[in-house]
Length: 170
Image (cartoon, rainbow, N blue to C red):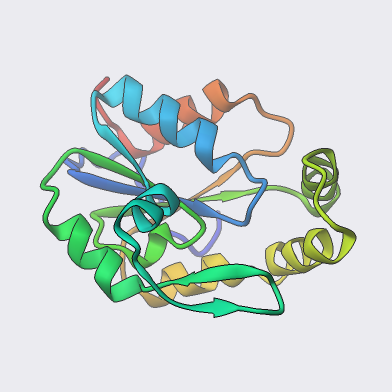
């Protein structure tokens, strides 16, 4: 069993669940399915940041905007309960529980290549997965954390794993 909390036998009444992980691990599909099964509202944090212009800079090297985590968290605080948050930085948001999606490096590399990503961007994200960057950040937050391996799984199976492990009612 990993160092993470094992909660199969706990009956948690959660109101905000963060789905996080390295790009390519299945966050978007899994978060959408989980929100539908639980009857929760899905919040795509990247769309929220775009809609409300929640940025504090631009990363020239990566060619992307830098999300203002504090302002985004304040927006989440205003939204109430029964939310599924989705993004590679969802673990930085207010949440009752964080689900980290993981994928073995070979499969992750294939998934990112199939999305047409540049080699440098693929390798940067595969390295982040190998080094467990998001897992480390999530554990340091002090929130309750569950790790789910999506390697070789359909999103529906990963969602069932999450529901079973967190003992959630559908």
